[in-house]
Structures are given as C-alpha cells and as structure tokens.
Length: 302
Image (cartoon, rainbow, N blue to C red; front, side, top):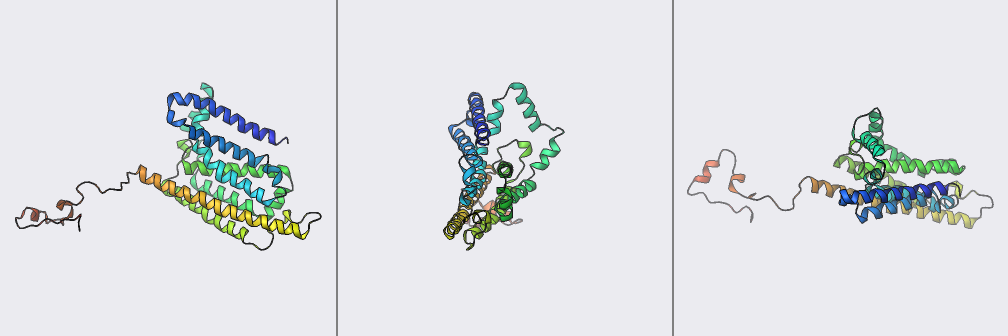
C-alpha cells in the first residue's frame, strides 16, 4: 500500500504539471498542445502507474500473465505514448522561469554532464540496455531472485521503465535534440534488433509444454490443477509478448520509414519533363536533336 501512494502521486503530479505547461504552450505553439498529446500522456501515466503499483503489483506475485502485463504496459504502451505527448516541452513550460532556463541550457548547451548524457543516450547503448532489460525480465532465474523481495520487484520495474524511456526517446525523436541523434536507418535497425529477439522469446514461452517459472508452480500446497493453470497463464504471457510486441515494433518501423520519405522529399509523381529527349539522349549525341530527320520518342507511353 505504501508503494502505491508515491507511484500514483508521481503520476498525478506529472499530469498536473503537464496541464499547467500545456496552457502556456497553447498561447505560444498550439501545435505542441493538442488534445491528442494530452490523451497520450494521460494514457502513458495511467499505464505506468498501473504496471508499477495497483493493481498489477500484487497480482504479479501469483500470476505470470499479470507480470508479463507489467512489461507490456511499461515497454509497449507507456514508453511510446509518453514521448508522443512531447513531455519535455509541456513539463518544462510549467516550471519557474529560472529552473526552466537551467534545464533548457543543460539540454541544449555543452556542460560537464554532456559526455555522460551523450554516452547514456547513444543509440548503441540505448538499444543494448533496452534489449538486455527485456531478455533478463524473461529469465527464470531472475524471476526467482526478483520475486523473493518486494524491493527487488520495484527496482526491477523502475529499471525496465528507464530502459523503455531511453529507447523510445530515440525512436520517436521527441526528447532534447542534443541527446536524440538516431538516424532513420538507425531507428529501423534498433526496432528490428528488438523485434526479432522479442518474437523468439514470446514464441519460446508460448509453445513451451512445461512450466518455465518455478516461482508460480513450486508453492506450498501446489496441486496438478494449479500447475495446469500456471502453464496456461504462461502460454498466454508468451502470446501477449509475441503478438502485441510485434504489432508495436512493426508499426513503429512503418511510421519511421514513412517519416523518412516525407521529410526527404519523396514524391509519388515523377518530376516534370522527366521524359524529355534531352534527358534520354546519350552523352555526345546531343547534336542529333537538331537533325531534321530525327523522330522524338514518346518515352511516357513506352
């Protein structure tokens, strides 16, 4: 119960600060304070609080499907939705002028923290940190160690939340530009580098015919019916990770590719005069265009 209060209190405080900053932004840059962005941060904070505290915090100790739901909410729901709301702009706008300038200067100008922040937000480190956090989350030995202590359980969720926020900051490019340097190709590679292990892990858990996590089966008074229920929950957990994870990662890849085409000037229609004779004539033979017997070609029809 004591853990629920700071988690939900932090979520409520962030939402209040965002609403206050949103009012300021609406007069300066209305496009940064739209209702869709407000819905995104509200959903992200609700998913984050539900995963870290009530109701999944207690359910995850006896239900493996609830524990997998925590990872899905943190990594696949709260992470991407939080950055889609442009929280840096909304939250800093709510701060006092002096503190806002200090944080903005830290994010935009070089400082003594720049090397550390640059290393912590590099694409390779962020990808490796996020992938490692996800794979460790599925490890049976880690589950045994984590569930033995509520403090370890909470610390594990906070670590997973940090990894998800760093990863999706690079994918959405919605954080401070100085520390968001992933290119279009790099973002696609990062998503593929997480999607493939996610599919392998999800399928391995879903199709396993024996219980993988002893914590949910080796309990005092365990009966065969309980083992069957644990195996069914395990299969659902793997399917949730596999299907929902693939949906989010593949959709993100499509959106990144679409953004790259839009920003790099991709056009569906060919440029004007693409079929002119001057463009198709071989170098050195331009004089033939002035010959009387030369017959122009209809390259568009051909």
